[in-house]
Image (cartoon, rainbow, N blue to C red; front, side, top):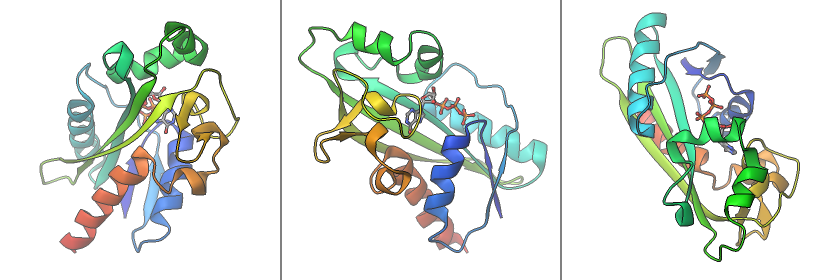
Length: 183
Ligand code: ITT
């Protein structure tokens, strides 16, 4: 059994959909842990270690972010704050008249068991920032994250479709491969 620590129910839905193809039981707990300001990797490492010790069980945590090239990686590690403040409309405004709309979603999974040190797994997906919000599926930045190969935003993809190639799919798959090889 692995416990996914997150306050984000959309992440849980996506993770459950990915784990169902594997022989690993996943439970979910919304257990607040203090996130230091730092890189995605630092946040995932400290969160996983803290939660595994507090709850005395193996856990995964995830820290994710949207990195926009023309904004030199912003909002990156500030993604939660930016989503809660200026939101998608604010991001679109920052990119008015910007030709280079390349962006990347990153997800870092931190895994830790009570008596071991944390391990991290990075997943990425490339895309572009759309010129307007499209679709009402997914969550947060999904309606402005456009995937050219699909000609759709993440907001227009079902969970199954997003899970074919998302940053979360890539990080969780790396984790699952490593975890399964440990058994
Ligand atoms: P935790 O409890 O797991 O920390 P969170 O929602 O705070 O949940 P993060 O800090 O990892 O998640 O994410 C930073 C921001 O990026 C936050 O506003 C998320 O909603 C958003 N985000 C993360 N993954 C996303 C995805 O797949 N699609 C759209 N937005 C995403």
